[in-house]
Length: 497
Ligand code: FES
View (tube, rainbow, N blue to C red):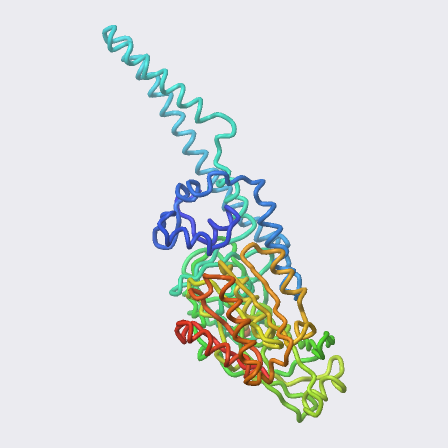
């Protein structure tokens, strides 16, 4: 087992999130070198790490995936060729280790013979010393060879190496695991890492990246041509290759909205579902070869019926770039709303343009995340939360404030997160008045509800706050948090009308 482990791998081995280990590193509780942790310090912090402890972590991971409310993640084994290559690699390490053990054995036998010789040549005092030394060596060797001496983390690490390869992205130093049959691009997206890409199908070349070390395997024949020169330099398409061994690659990671290109896509209606509170779920699917690249929390413009357009926040995670979800409130008289509620049909074409908007997660912030959704403001917040879950955020708090009970139109999604995840806290608040028109009289009510939220959690003012919903409620809430002393950079706002 390597002496140094990446934080991603170490977290997986002991069944905690990356954020938990990062906190231990920051506090000095765990030693790290160049972003990696030592096995010793990992064991010191988690002395009871046992294989059986996997159950809870697996349960949480599984529910987290289901709570995404989209495609069920495929947790299949890697394909047989990849599996065989990983086993071959581990077999080589095993053979090297066996060779070393055999060398040590020979060395031990020779040392024993030497001590026998010395014993015969020395006086009684020295003979006693040699005998004691031999006894000590014998005891030490026997206890080292006792069954059960093996480190449970080493067993788990070897298993993990068969099931998943680790990828490190330079120069950003992001890392992620490639599991199942995922391509390098899919695995990065599942981990919330926004690498550059376009079609996901080997046509556009936007996912081209350089492999610095490690072995990859082509899993998809692609039309995009990589020149012989680039091939010899290690360039591959991330959407068409998977990792056989641990890999280091050079690729650009989108750091801001400016890194995401404007796109125009003809998507199709996969389904619509009406919720309580006159809300509708619109599920669009893009063509396989033209997916929407966006950052969690962003919006797009949808055009239906050839004429009616509206800007809507995307209510799904960028990690599922083909399935785009939107929450739409019925607004009688609004042509877009009337068309979607009354005339839009399954499989109908919907033009998607964008993305736009800067209501995105501050990924580098170490602070706890506080989301406050007012009515339909849950849509962009759902996207942010799903992305935060992909990133294994340490602490997520969601307060959903509805004008009335029906305005909290998807309570089960939020409750499922809270049930499944120890680091997720959820509370519902009913205002009892229309949050879209907060009159001067109602302002005091809204402020006292916000005061209650802050009063219930002393840590909130040290966190990052994300507010989304109707303008009158959101702007009042923004003023409230700024007045509490939170800097503007820690209060993000999205107005959803
Ligand atoms: S994303 Fe288009 S070729 Fe890979």
